[in-house]
Image 1: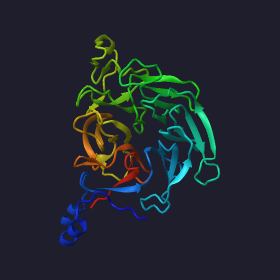
Image 2: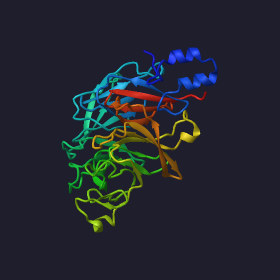
Image 3: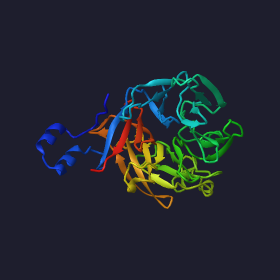
Amino acid sequence: MRAKPLFLLPALGLLLACQSSSQSQQRAERQEGVPPGFKVEAFAENLGRARFMAFGPDGVLYVSSIRAGTVLALPDRNKDGRADEVITFADGLRLPHGLAWKDGWLYVGETHQVARLRDTDGDMKADAREVVVRDLPAAKMHFTRTIGFGPDGGLYVSVGSSCNVCEDEPRRAAVLRFNADGSGGEVYARGLRNAVGFVWRPGTSDLWATDNGRDWLGDDLPPEELNLVVKGGDYGWPYCYGNRVTDPEYNNSARCRNTQPATFEMQAHSAPLGLTFYDGKMFPEEYRGDCYIAFHGSWNRSVPTGYKVVRVRFKDGKPIGIEDFIDIWFKGGRVSGRPVDVKVGPDGALYISDDHGGRIYRVTYQNR
């Protein structure tokens, strides 16, 4: 199956037939909610609750399907920008979420543990499975476990809070760090209510994480956060948010004085999840080095917000501004997709998972 552009302007074929100039054709081909020169296509469909992604050593894209308890492999053997098939790499997992490759093993963050999977016979199905980290805190609220290997070789695991706002156990609302074999577990940073996405800025040891703020403080509080996460840092939850603003549940300004303020604030209730720094070569120079974040979208807001991928501009290693990048999933009051994760592919395209539509999208750029 060939990939077909999604969300094109109505009656595109008629427009193209009626407009003879190349400039008019370029305007007609532009997708609404997409920057000029960029195109969004479906890479894979019918994936269920598609969540976090990882490219394997062989260039194949893998994605967790959280409710199905599976990890799916999506090979594109003919390199046409469309997955040839959907292969169940592993099943029987408990709410699988984060994925990370190391030494030929695919590590999977389940809600209660980190396991690793391996395909030993080349059929793109895991036939070896081992548990690396046992007994992660599990709860009904914030049950996803995102994982990643840092430049130091350590295995990092984000664990969200067990509640909206409360004093939680030390290993919750935190980023944990383990040795690659699962030993030496420690709390790397705390006070992060639900840091679903984290990533290291390429070429540095800077760890950046999204954080989802609490609910029920109105449409515009508290801000969502993008944080530079440092070892031993306390980012305030549940006592404060943003720039050390005290939470009304506790009103403890003294407790907030020694916390880390938000590095960068974003629209409340956008639900920022996966993020990546674009280090490919397909996009124009001005788009490279910036951070791209999936906004899953609001539920606790009178006027919905989110449901898009945003671009956070970086300068000298710091965020300086934010703008919409791909905004196609919320139109006319209707939600057609909820972005979860973003990854830069070996081909330089940007891949976006959607757990509402069960798709993965591929964003490409062509200079016209």
